[in-house]
Image (cartoon, rainbow, N blue to C red; front, side, top):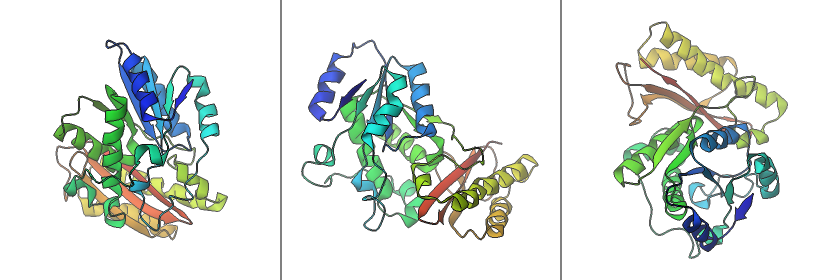
Length: 281
C-alpha cells in the first residue's frame, strides 16, 4: 500500500494511472472505523484505483471546537487499510494543503450550509466544501464516496458537483451502526460506556419516527415530536431535530412525493453527535 504525503507525489501517481481506468476517492479525516471501511469496500467494487485521503481539515473546525484533540493515528489507520491493498492513501499535512494559511477562496452553498448543523457550526460546511473541491482537483477522481450519516455534507457536495460541473459521480453509502443502533463515528471515542448507552437513543428516536412514517404519518411536527419524546425520556437535549427535503435541505411541513430526511444533532458528554434516517414516500 502506498502512502503519499505531498501534492507533487499525488500528481505523479495520478498521471501514471492509465486514462481508461476509473479512480474512486474516499475522503476521510482518519480515525478510521467500520463506517469508513464500508466506503472503501464499495469503492473497490466500483473502480480498480482507490484513493483514501486522510486529512484533518482545520478550515471546518470552529475556534472552540475539537480540532486539536480530534483523534489522529496515521500508523493505525494505515494498518486498518492494509487488508484492502491495493489502494493509495493520500495523507498531506496542513502546510501541504494550505501553504499560505487558510484558503482565501471559500466555496459556499448558502441555502444549504446555514441550516441544521450549519446553525451551530458557522463556517463548517464552507470549510468542508472548500477542502473537498481541493481534493477533487488534486486526485481527479471519477467518483467519490461519502457516508449517509453525514447527510447534510452529502447533499452539499452533490450540489457543489452539479453547480461547478465537476465530472465526478457522488455516491452515498448507508450508515454503519453499532449493535445498539448508534451510528459509527470517530467522535464515539469520546464517549464513556454509559454515554454510549445514552447515545444509542438518538437512533432509537429517529427509528420511532420512521415507524410512525411507515404507518402513514406525513406531518413534520408529529414526526419530530416522536423523536423528541424518545430523547426527553433519556434526558437528551438536542441541538436540533429537522425534517427537510433530502436533496435541497429545505424544511418540509408535510412529506409528499420527494424523499425526506429527519436529522438531529445532540451533545452527549464531550461528543457532538449527528444522525439521520431517510423517509421515502
